[in-house]
Picture (cartoon, rainbow, N blue to C red):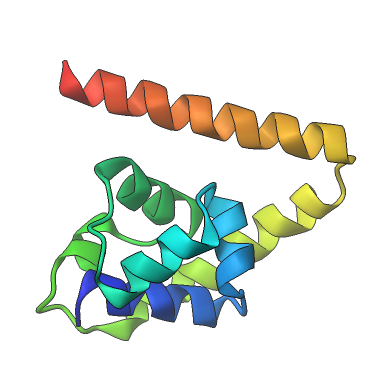
Length: 114
């Protein structure tokens, strides 16, 4: 199973539309659609983000030969907890959370390149 197929499984296991998933991760719906179709290769930052936000082992995501779906078990619980708290925030704080996540991902990417 390819990364693209696993990504779609993660999205569907969490009952998210492409638009909701893309918004949650911080990319456009069109970009997500292209990644799910295998037309665009995901960046390392994107892979890290999916792994962290959905509590999925990055090695499982990247290993096309690993079709063990038990890796999805942690995904729904972590996302539910995060989304429950996120939905309680006012819009201005939601935007703040999104900005902070994006900055952390950029810092993480910069740190890994050193």
